[in-house]
Length: 173
Image 1 (cartoon, rainbow, N blue to C red):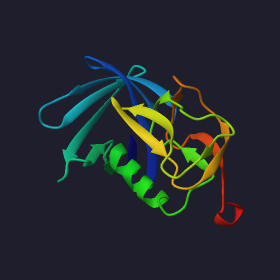
Image 2: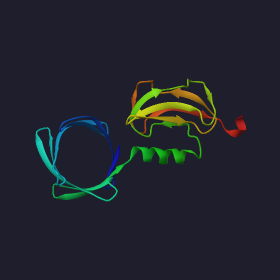
Image 3: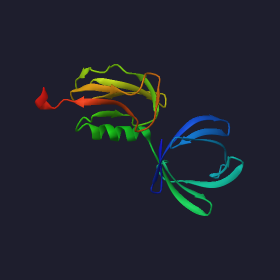
Image 4: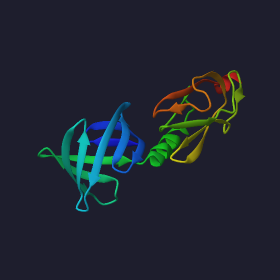
């Protein structure tokens, strides 16, 4: 998921959670933390033998928080991956780019094309599973698969290039 902390944007992935023990990555860097939440929004975080306390105040809508820690306040916005994906898809409807980029972290489930395939608008080029949901990624104009940079079963990150394309301009048809 994408988290905005003031002007900073961080890519945060929950790797695993067992009880209070949480494994996550922030911008690709792994962290093992122990987090205990209290009912009043306070939380205690233990990381590498150091203890940190924070207060979480949820704003309306549930995807924004004020976090008070170390005598400072931080405005935090959690960007819904599905909404980000839909915004990116809507923006890409205008013109096919020369690459397919993963809008969120996930696992490549299927690549139904191969290098050299000529594709038509609407053809599916990759299926990615994220948050137990599968999403089909399609091209929106005629193109040829130039290079496939991942394999089925690979994990991908946000904004990772999955494949490159040669977009066919109307005058080349």
